[in-house]
Length: 290
Length: 319
Ligand SMILES: [Zn+2]
Image (cartoon, each protein chain N blue to C red):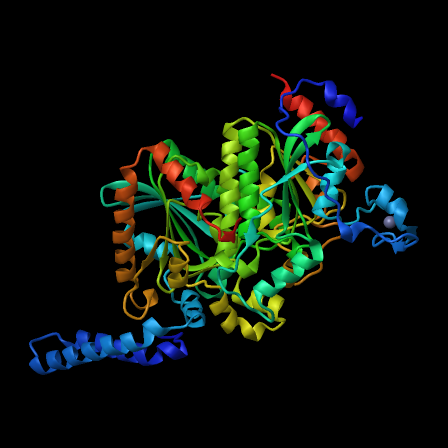
């Protein structure tokens, strides 16, 4: 369905040709490897999972994937332009727990190839230019500190400048402890930036994936004009363990899942990874009507 | 008042009590007692200077959470000539963990919104230990919009361990409630001042804390996570909370240095809990000073400056 939309009116103008294709080395599973699904426990052929947008063909479980892979799935031909690539984390508190924050950053950098937990991008989705910030849970649990806050904010600003819709794909444990209050204030910064997107009458579509909790949920992620979640994702303010400890009882089955949020009126819809692009294009068409 | 005395404040508290006792005894002309009092006061200043400026982050945390520390209601009742509490979010229920007032300070009307902790078990359960549910944030927003509508300033007093992590809170959208407040406060057409009076617990504090001026009492704290929780996660050891308090840079002075907050507000000798009245008078004076500065700004400029303030927070490398 995706490419048929090339003929729709070009409201989100194409500014630049997509330049690079990003692939993620973590996700190139060696041939012949078999996986056990976390949800249904079935043994499945990894290639089959990969071909299926990393969804379990047996039970529909959505395997966690990297930001780069998400963007590859979303953009036409998997191509997009990445921006704000040289923004890198510093260590404003000179934070050290059992390890130095600087060393942790270095380790994650080596492991993921990323400087921090978000990729900012622009490209074509069904022929519509969109600006997308995708978070990577693999980088320090997708935690938000200075770099994530800054890149999301610049992403919003770029969407305004280029007159495109803004999309965020969240996967985060919340605000990053190692940058202390500076992290917390990124909630304020990103939320405030969204008021400017609203002033420009550009749509914001927030996509929530497993897991999205804490300071990311309590800021930009819950502020979408439209909020879409992947099936069975954990989404909430407090983490389930914290709640259990506070109330001293076990949580009901299905608590804080996408389905639970839909039932309670907190999100607009649940989309599988496969359907997402189609739904987004439909939304772009809708919002593009004058 | 001396039922809960922290170890490090004990010598000061004893001396301070003695000063106050001596002061009470001076009913008639008594040169001897006056001399004694003067001497005691001199000692008190000396002791104060020895103890308080050197308090570490953990000690500040203890003071910020001191069970006798004045809470929002205590400040409002001293600071304001008149005040009317208003209730409810018009959606679900009234949240006693956040209180809201239409108040008069000097010759000015303003709205005051604050976290409210309880004193004693019964009241603490009623106030949910100052941990709001979504309806608390929604009540706060409703009251702020009243201020906006009538062109009045907003003062928020922050004092919470955090937003409540409970089943109902999640069902009713705790995250959305906080996010909505951040969004709306960032463009609210009214001056907003927030003052951390005790504990600034993460998103639960920020949910009423996005403002034109962020002030902190000198023994208050403001943090992305409680030192205990941070110790449990990063050190796997709750006992490390003391060191973590230091590492998180969560005291008023630390946050002033990091340029997160605008001003550290002095507390009376020995801390706000030693003298509610003075603490409230100091706060009143500081708030009025900031209000008079903000009131001179056209509303567009006010909001633009507020945006710049938050837009500029972040430390990263580039290039
Ligand atoms: Zn499965």
